[in-house]
Structure formats: C-alpha cells, structure tokens
Image (cartoon, rainbow, N blue to C red):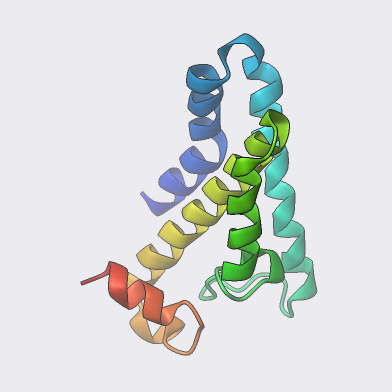
Amino acid sequence: MQFFTHYFLHLLFPLFISLVFFRPRWIKAYLILLATMIIDMDHLLASPIFSANRCSIGFHPLHTSYAALVYAAGLLLPKWIRIVAIGLLLHLLTDLIDCLWMYQSCRECIANQQVAQLLDWFSW
C-alpha cells in the first residue's frame, strides 16, 4: 500500500492537479509537475545514495524546512513558477507521508533523524 500511495502521489495526483487547475494547458502543467521530481538529485549527495530506513525530509538539502519555505514563497510568483512550487511542495508532502509510514512501522529507524519530532506530532 505504501508503494502504491507513494507513486500515486508522485505520478497520478499531479495529473489530477493539472486537469483540475490548469485545464487549458494541462499537459504542460503535468510535465512541469513531473519535472519537479528532479529535486531527488540531492540523493546523489548522500552515502549511501539509497537507504530503505532513511527519511529524506530533513536529510537531503532540497528536502529541508528551509527549502520548503523557498518553495512556498514560489506560490506567490507568476503562474509557471507557481506550478513548479506546487510540484516541489507536493513532492515534499509525498516524502513526508512516506516517512510517517516508515515511522509507524519502525520508530527506532527514524529516531535520530531531524524529522522525528515532526513525525511524533503527526502520529499522536
């Protein structure tokens, strides 16, 4: 279920957003939203590049709260930048949901990561 939800939010939910909010140019909007997944390039800076028990929120540079503030500020800018900001924030939300799922099944896996306090708040 986690796998399905993760890829639904990364691939199909942006299609829904494009069709509902950017109807006249939905294909362009959808491609921009998909292109925002390039923020995962910051995973290449980590060693190891992939770790099944690592939450990307707060760990990778483009997945931090500071980055999220910049992405949120993009919502105030012209339309195409706003679409990029929506895609980046949706990406962070998807990864946060993944972290929450991971935290529910293995609290000690995330206990020492920056995002642990945020996940504690969500998992009351």
